[in-house]
Image 1 (cartoon, rainbow, N blue to C red):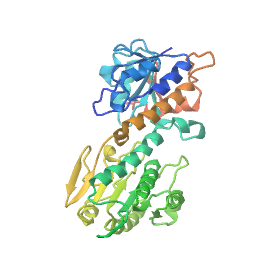
Image 2 (cartoon, helix red, strand yellow):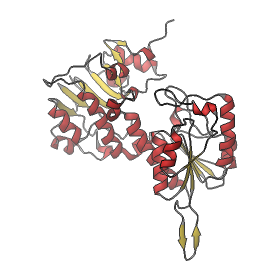
Image 3 (cartoon, rainbow, N blue to C red):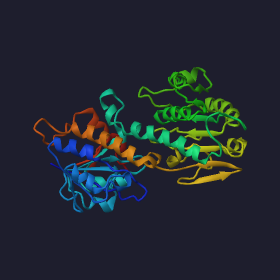
Length: 375
């Protein structure tokens, strides 16, 4: 079997879907590995590193490949170079992108969306959302610190005392927890909020203070899969009032709230931004889905009344070497389930991981959540 590692066509995507370490493991599974030239350069991985690991670096790497490993889904121009029936593993961003799914189906590829991996024990090592969100949470704090005109830790000097920065994390998923841990390591006073009651203990275990309206609705605000439920308008109003008062006193606010397949919930209004002290910073990790912060602009740092709003996109990609290393291991772990003892490609279509992630197969969109709507 031939595996191709594609070079990302999006110039803003620095990550790569394999590393020399995962190439060695893919070869141990019996695969021939070909890498497109320059695929890993933006992640600090020159072509020579891949050849040293046993891969072939070739411009026609995708030709006749049985499996293609990517970061982002292939678009129509790329698909022309893919073999019909090829398995493609990538972050597919399927929600609201019906035309792109149809293009992949028409090209005859079998597309797997890594971000749809179920959050079960055996799939933890394949969970790209967690691996990438973890790094995004770290980088969000670093980006906030970069824009903030003061230091994070309290410093007692002969010239006087510098107070510790106050950091508020909104949304305590994987990204939020890492943001809390990173801000605490840097010496900030950290508070955090989330609508899921289970997160209170996690927040406090990291040395931060939890902030929420803890009523009955709050106690039942989590799905069986561990995701946040959308809250009632009444709860949102109570939480917004509590949050608005708290935000006024904060130096840095980091928002991480995303609900799969939906626009990002608005957590910080223009009035809240206006209430913050000049020099304060907001970092919006949900800007690609519409943003949690009113006024956030994708890919930009905007300033409103002396308050900076950081709206960088692909934040995990801002630490590309680390992000690629973790993502490549996620892909490898999933691909290993598709290889049998004879070292041949053998997808088990009854496997719950395959069922959850397969988007297209045999010229059709097969995932039940993304079936074309009938006229």
